[in-house]
Length: 257
Image (cartoon, rainbow, N blue to C red):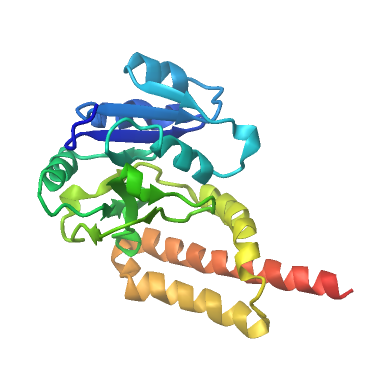
């Protein structure tokens, strides 16, 4: 595969059987589907094989986050262009057509950030849109740092799909429950700790950071349009900030003893 107009889809997986069939079927018309699996123990590999995906393995015990596996996988892809898709994201036919149209242009960008539609309590969340993710790029101009929730670093020009083009957005199937979000708040806040240790948060931060995050989600990002789901999601956003600040204060107090 050396055609400049071909695209590899990379899907990183770990016990991803829940949505994987739909995810793979949605990208079946791309030039390559590469599944980079972190030693799944469910039906993930069975589903990938059934659909003729190329499968590579990245040892899970070596890493607790997915980013090193992303870096490994994108450079194992055979095509010049790579689209990274999570195992709970759907690529629309319109997005596929748009990406192929872009790479055939003489002035194609080196990376394209794609909007993503998120759902909570079964509702599309205005407050969580456009939620841009940088997932389409030239393979040889891209490096994915080993830091949780970071974006790839791309040499060259990066553009965003206009947010009003909702037909080109990823469909995020996660639809996390309140329990899922609270569990992730605990996990992700631990990953945030090293980045925030230079912050001298005090009691005021315990009030203001969660309040500002709630107002951003509910008012500025129009979560009020999403009814009860929007209100609950905005409150959970505020709780996440409470957890981070509380853990940092707790850590500082323990070191002072």
